[in-house]
Image 1 (tube, one colour):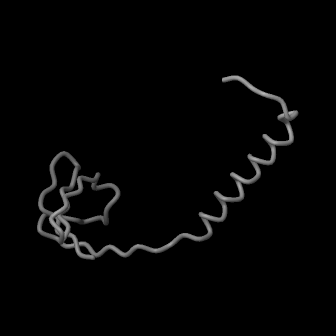
Image 2 (cartoon, rainbow, N blue to C red):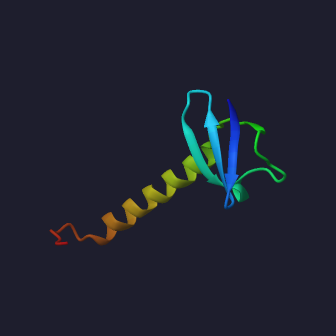
Length: 76
C-alpha cells in the first residue's frame, strides 16, 4: 500500500491513501528525513506472538477471578 505525504505542519504529517482516506500522524512515528511529496509503503503483518500473549493474560485473569469469586453474587 502506498501513501502520499501531502504536507507536514507542526510535526504532523498529512498522509493520503490511494482510496482518498487521509491520516494525520506525528512525524516522530514515521521514517527520519520524511518530507512533503514523499511516498511511504506500508505493509501489515499479523503479530501472533502478541495475540497469544494477550490471550494468555486474559485467560490467567479469568482463572484468578473465578478462583477468588467464592461463587456468590457481586455488586458493582
